[in-house]
Image (cartoon, rainbow, N blue to C red; front, side, top):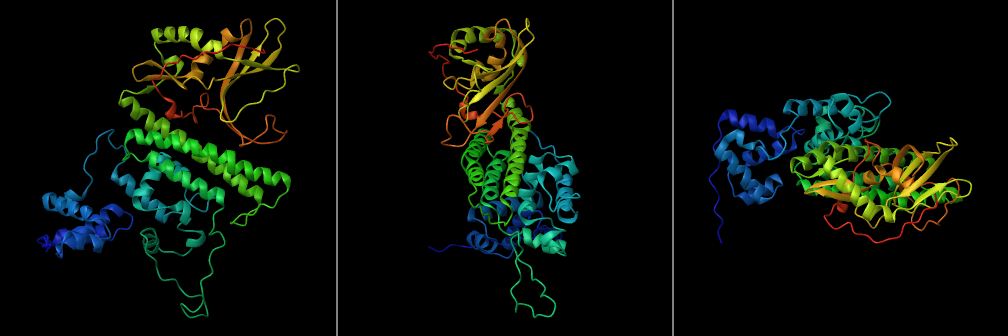
Length: 453
C-alpha cells in the first residue's frame, strides 16, 4: 500500500521564527516538542516520518499538525480542561523554572527541593513538583545547578542536561580531551532505602498530577500510604535489627549506617507531609466539588449526630475493648497497622491520672456513611463517645495513633525497639485516610464487650 504524504504546512516568516524559538526552549518541554512537530511538518512528509524525526507517536504528530492547521500558533497551547481553574499563571511558571536554573539554593542546601522552592515562591510543594515534572527538571536527582557536580555549568548546558542531551566536557588540565576517563562524583549512587523512597515519590507525584482522573489520584494516595507502611515494616525494621545486633550494614553511598537511617527517616517525613498536603489541598476539595465529603464529627448536622449516637450504642460500643495501663495492667501489645485512641483520664475523687488505649475495631468499616456520599471516620465517632466508655472519669485529652511494627515481631517488643507511629486524625498536618476503606456496606458486627479498665 502506498502512503501519500500530506501537503506541507505553509508558515509565515513570523510563525517560523516563533516556532524555532519555542523548539529551542529546553525548559518548556511540551511546547518545544509541539513546535518541532510543526516545523517538521512544514518540511513535508507523512505523519509517520514526522513522528520518527521528532521522537513522538504518529497520533501525536497528526494531532498537533492538525491543531496548528486549524488554529495556527494558538492551537499549540493546552485547551481549557474541566475542573478547578488553574491558580498559577504562566508567568509564575516561567519565573519558577528560571529560578531553578539560575539561582543557588538556600544556605545549607546543596540543591533545590520542593520544600525550599515552595517556601521561596509561595507555591505549594505539589505545584512545584508538577511544574518541574512538566518542564523536564529534576533538581532532586541532578543536584543544584550552581553547586556540587554542576559547578561551572552554564545555563545552556543545564538546559541540555535536563532535555536528555549531553554536552562536551572540558579535559582536565594537562591532558587531551577524551584521553583520560572523567572521574565520577563520589555521591553518584543511592542507598537502597533512598532509592525505594524516590520510587514511592513518583507514586505520590501521580496523585499530585491534576491531569490524572480524580479517583485515580485518590487511589495513588492510598497506594503511597500502603507502600510506606510496607517500607517501614520490612526495609527500615531490617536495617535497625542488623544495626542492633552488630551485623555489617553496607550502603552504596558510603555513608555511616546511622546517617543512612537518619536520612531515610527525614525523607520519609517530608514525603508524608507532602502526602497529607496533597490530600488536604487537592484531593479533598476536588472530592467535595463532586459531592463526596469526608467530615469530622463537629461538621455533622444535629440529625446525623443523633443517628450515629444510636449506631454507636447498637453496633460499635459492644465491640470496643478499653485497656487501662497501670502497675496492675502493663502496656498492652499493639498489633501492626492497628488504629487506636490514646486517652488520658482522671479520677475526680482522687485526682489520679491514668492512660488508656482504645483499639478501633478492624472488623468495622473505617468510614461510616452518614448520608449519600457523606462519610465520617470511625475513630471520630468513638472519640465523641469516650465518656460512655469511661463513665465516672474525666477525659483530659485523646489522640488517634496508628502503629506500623516490623513483620514477624514478637508480641512484646524489647525496650528500645522502634516502630512507625503516626497520628492520622488529631494531627491536621498529616491526616490522610485510606480511601480503599470507604464503602457503603453495613456496619453490622457481632461481638462481645470486655474491658480491663
